[in-house]
Image (cartoon, rainbow, N blue to C red; front, side):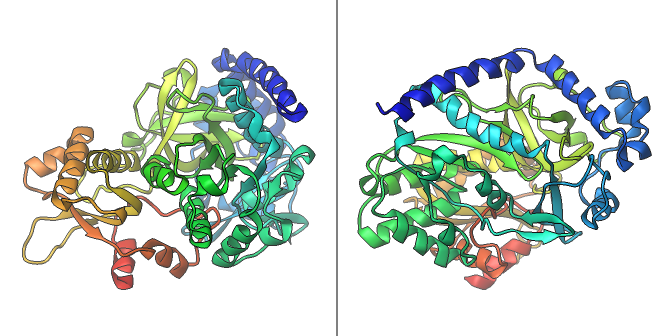
Length: 497
């Protein structure tokens, strides 16, 4: 064991013990965060407009600060981006994380001197918790790759801006710099396919021990490695034993990854976003990610089924239940107040509080009132893959409301198979049964002959990559929606094939 590996184990124990102080006192921790946020935000424009001085508790806050998304906060965001100080948080932000918006075009999410360190600390702690949980620290001696956006930053009215992953690249600690790959020059390549080829050239002869990124884009990197060498990834990198990911559920990819690697490797799931680093997997054999309660983020939760009602209840941690689908609302040291990040989550545990990401409040299928969410389609597909020994590269689901030949409507599953099932009809049946077991609305629609059983459209290899490239979102932190309530993606896929 090297000195670095030994020291990492000691530091991991120290950090885990420190974390346990807030893990074991969740409600007091959240109340302290809430009061600190109100105090810090009181003299901002937002704080004055919403009379923070007279907010004493969560009930007051709920009355005076409505839930908003980016579009609804845009007046404040525009003032901040134009260069005004003390708009949402004291002073100016350190950075803007630029993301693609919906109705508002580009979104500029503030990262402040108070919020930025929490992103870095959470990412560090995720790895340290893994070391503490498993005792494995030898990977710190090998090379580590983080597939991410370009670290080159622009500037807008005195504030630097870029993709979150590119901003974070500036904060890699000194003791990891020698281990970190790819090179700065390669990381700055904009075209994703060119970048992946350059990363392959730089890393193929290295001792890679940790690989991190969104699964779909890491898969592309693995495939290029195999094309170049004719070897499994695990043969190319014999000491590779830790995959770190976030952004999408890994389970639909796991069988494909194990085939590409040639063996199973440990993984750590992260829940980072431009708006905050919310959770990470702290134990290998426990389902769910530990919610970060001491990271300058105050959480509220609204039941997803009631979200679009007038004045739905805004729940605190003490009110949540395991297995219920919630929209997560945050207030944070980034200056986001009662902010709807758009994600839906479910609690897998309340002692301590652990969550999974179940989908997006805007990414669902309910063309007929079925309320299908991402978690349901992912778990149904996973069951079918397990039952049939099939393997998939990527998929998405859309409703077919007006099929030809006077058929009943149905859900259309667009699947790019790595290994097709022997019986596609049986495969579809397993998915459909799993969907009915999870979702009573969907079952009732099938039983009532409102919907017919789902249909599968098989896609040629690389169709989804072609789709993402056609909309300018190939690589980086971009993710394909698992499901849509319209046929925009479906129609584009049909054009491609």
